[in-house]
Length: 362
Image 1 (cartoon, rainbow, N blue to C red):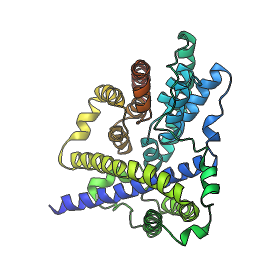
Image 2: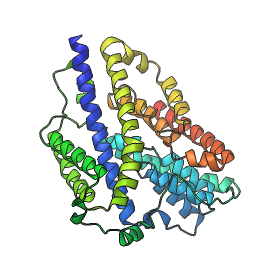
Image 3: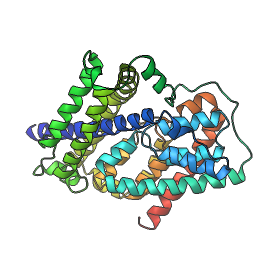
Image 4: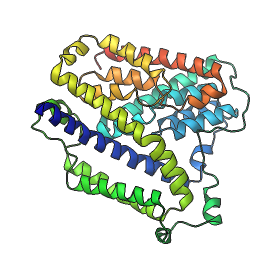
């Protein structure tokens, strides 16, 4: 019982750390998106190949915003079907933030590979397919390009420390949360307990126990504090609180906690590692099939398995190619035929590259 409580507490520490890092990165991405007034996502090349590159570029952006932008452009006939495929291959949804937090070096390598595969496959799809765009639709609930943010600031209140004078409950909660997280990072309150046997596999593959990395994120978090303190109330309530916290925080926390707990319990009480090592081809197939689900969360299992060293890179690659978080949900609503075709292509490509990497021992 004592061992289980110890294991549970360590999983909770890791979960809070991962979730905190992910939220910090999401807030920074939201800041960049707002400050650019959407221009980052709306410049489109006139060439077909440029659309594929753009789709891959939007997909590689961590989180859902780039994916939603690509779906919106595709729905308005501004992006080719190959560009859409490129986005879906390159995108890893919210798990991209998690991978950057858990396995930063491997995550960068993975992003580079996904970007290259996305461009190659998107280009081939456009060469082989005719023009394949759904009817134009008026809007897309999932993506906001923030072109009106500057108008909101002028109409109500501009960014500045004066916004702290009558701080809303949401602003206070965000500030307290980020400040507490910075303190926890700076004082090592979320670091691993290296002597605990159940987490030794985690300790040698991720950077959570490296104080300098935590300190780096603590410094980065100071910029987020400034952003929260100076942003106007519209941005605080509609974007930071409603979009980032309410839509993502609990989901990321629960999926991270669940994946870590299942794997740690399996390592501690079962011979799960040997079974998985003996069935990697089946794990690749499972990763491809789970990736078809248009939702962030299920992919977390394969991220965690790779971080603990229980599956090779081929499984993570197959899962990352196949899944695209919930960026494809608006596509399902707007064009079911495009959604099905895109998912079939994604799964096929994921299987090819996943098994290819497995057979060459990568």
